[in-house]
Length: 626
Image (tube, one colour):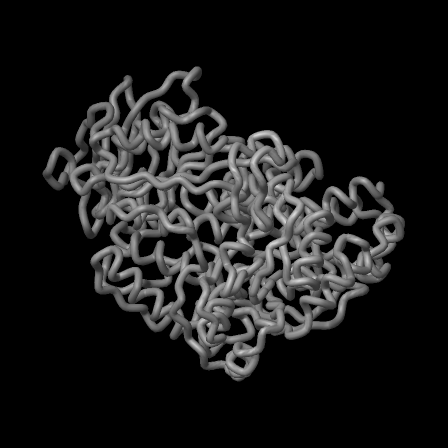
């Protein structure tokens, strides 16, 4: 079944009817307004598939006509249930389910896992977004399935929205990803195909998804892809905290001193850098470099340039970013990712105002204003020896802390309206926000900040079928009822936050608990990993790997992580080992789900797990209903 969120797959067993609908008692439940609670029934008898309408409001359409009695359907025939499409097809055990398409939310989970792997093992991968022509977009089952057959077994394919499919190509080099995109673009059913690469075009899920949307829009307009910046330069400033930030920006802009922007990813640091440059009075350009997106062996050449023959592959002399920005401003994003050698070279540029290309003997005098940004705690990095203290002191002359979106609640709905206006223009629509949507937006914690909000609105515009964006058009995690939690795990400051941990996928709950446990132990030991490993009774190497793969920071722990751990922890467990605590947390999550649902399939669906994984864990922990 193909619907606004993606595609669902269910096998037909002879003489065992399958009911499709939006009600809880449907065998295949899809929460879509065009479906009735029990909409239609499919049954396989003697090799033939029969569909029966169950008195639905919007009807079941076969071969262009609404049916009122049981009707046999052919293989690969499209049946309409309301506004959704069902395809009856067959496969061999050898084929398995390779043609199945995931929905966007599960795709993002796989994308997040790939980001963690790529970061831990220094690998690359590609994200593709494919748009069908207007004629083909109404037949997702045809052209999207064709894309699935062209992809590798390890590739992930999902429906982003009507007429759009997204692909994750693990460990794909740029040449390989572009060749695959060119192959897809040769299909007459494909209007445009965009390619974004990790880490060049983004280092988080929100950055990559936004980059794919931007590049696809450029492809469809026939515009040559431009360097990717933060989602939109348009801003909404209402909260007192942001008003104070912008007041300080305008005060420091004319000064030549370096500026350090501090804040979580997606808060709009590049937009502030542009504002500082525009109000500085400098006549040169603004040159932006993402330090985390440039390979470590190329970062010095990228920043400072090189002479011909300076290293293998240096076939001609090249200016670096600093020379390109002469007379203007250079913006160094993700400064905390800068390797040690590049930190030394950057310190010399800051102190002397001169740059020396790799392989050169002479220095070039420059007039460049430096703006740097990071979402990491540089002072903590100084304490652990991963960042130079003298460089931090030089760059930290003027610093600005940008508050996260969850601390600027008054800006969320106006910002959503702004992004809605932009998306309406891109997709040729005139949608409005339902009032209930505004309430949900203000209750969400927005870990991806402004960039995440823009992605949510952009996709909602694409998948909404009416004239207003409703609650059902938002990500599933945002639709859950909101509850309040106030208990606090040992070693963590008491907080009070609105969240819905019991409704989160199993993997997200476990990940949040791990982050909270690791962060609390590191904070209690002032970042000493050996001491933290002893507290958690785990090998130091294991702790170091988990800290790196989960991107654990010694900065303030996210309220969401804290509350999920609090909800799943009981008094007296702080003396248990890390593994023992996680096992007890897993048991509680599974026990609660089994108590609510009572069967493996429902537990797996509630927790976003593969049924086989859910069954194995329930068996391992001997979790039974009641």
